Image 1 (tube, rainbow, N blue to C red):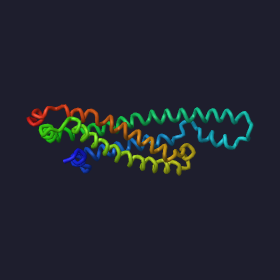
Image 2 (cartoon, rainbow, N blue to C red):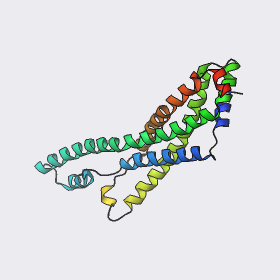
Image 3 (cartoon, rainbow, N blue to C red):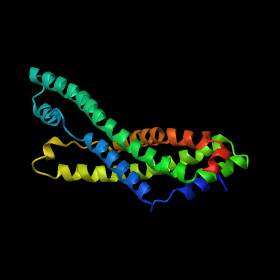
Image 4 (cartoon, helix red, strand yellow):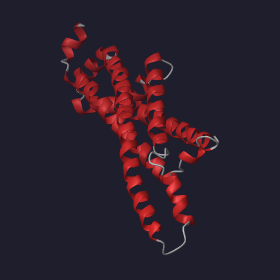
Length: 203
């Protein structure tokens, strides 16, 4: 059986650990994406004032300067919110994959006894992590976009919510998915490939 086939076989999305990891990754990406739309420094209002101000007024430059600084601050705050969300998603994948590695320890030992290199074992775990991260991130992007649209439709909050471009949301989701999958797969992959075949069979 191929590396990809074994990884897909190990993935059991009906199992509680995979479902829980998928939900946590989805919510983590949703929070990270939604944080991009929050108007942390009121620069959406400044933008409206800037557009309405007559050309040549000194006030225009001041508002434009505040608008530029506001975008920088908002990006920094969005990153601070996305960082713990990313770590939470990575932790969920790490736990799910570690339990999977322990459950399939005998399978990995047999593969090692048959001559499989450690690199191929690592690839199995990496594919599992990638599938979880991609699936959770896609769901999180959809949920985050729906949350942004819902907040924009709220009369009380609509003025504080911006409309990030689709490319910006996609880039944010891809970065979070890559970070979640990479961080969450390192330790389980090392655990899967460093155990001695005979020692795994004994347990």
